[in-house]
Length: 334
Image 1: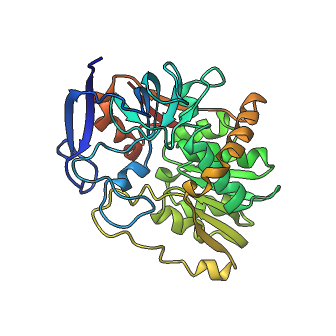
Image 2: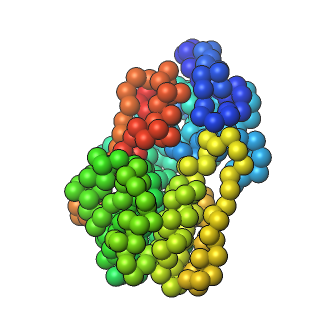
Image 3: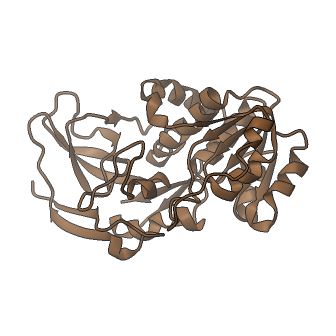
């Protein structure tokens, strides 16, 4: 069966925000599944801030996407052809299939999922890498304890909104940092955060000192830059700072700068730890089981921002991550 595939390939290393000329849109016949392989029709693509860092050359926690390669992306789809003994036609699967309509896989790194338990966008968000990142970032790296004050940056994003809810489930006082009054309202009124700081509304450090007069015990940072510096100035003794991402730095045309006030870690006898969720791959089932239980009990809410329109909308939809256009997990429906 010959099918027309559509793909987005990386055409150039972006300088600042990705622009149309950084992409090559290509249509060609979809590859056939060979022996021990299956072919997937993609239904949803996960769009994540880390994708911007994968477009840069240089050393990182994963190899960069090379010029001329299909852009890397996690997706969910259904199998339409299979020559693999463990994967059948009709199975719904999740994997790093890339930004394309059809993908061929040998099953490595691919998970079979049950969408009767939760819709595909939820499987990419709370029950996917975003939720797992929030879980291990707080539970294992941040080592949150009941009664502590937990601050989360990019709190209205896919990782941040889940992290704040986990902190509340574990009995912590939770403060989110987000951009705009509406996002802050969602955090408090819909997701149960104790307070939210609108970084667009003024001095974050001043607002945080007012909301956390005894200091911040755990900070899950997805932003870096000025937000990181503001929170470092407000740490409690023995605080733990978890570096999960740095979305404020990904599109910078200049070399990212470290926090000027890093010595606050010494003053507070605090720690700052970098964290990559892929290090926990063998424990993903543990996190998913816990997250699923919290969803089932109503303690954890999933929030997805699903954009319709197909693969052609990928470049413009990706930019929403860096312009504040999404609240919750950003997903492109194909």
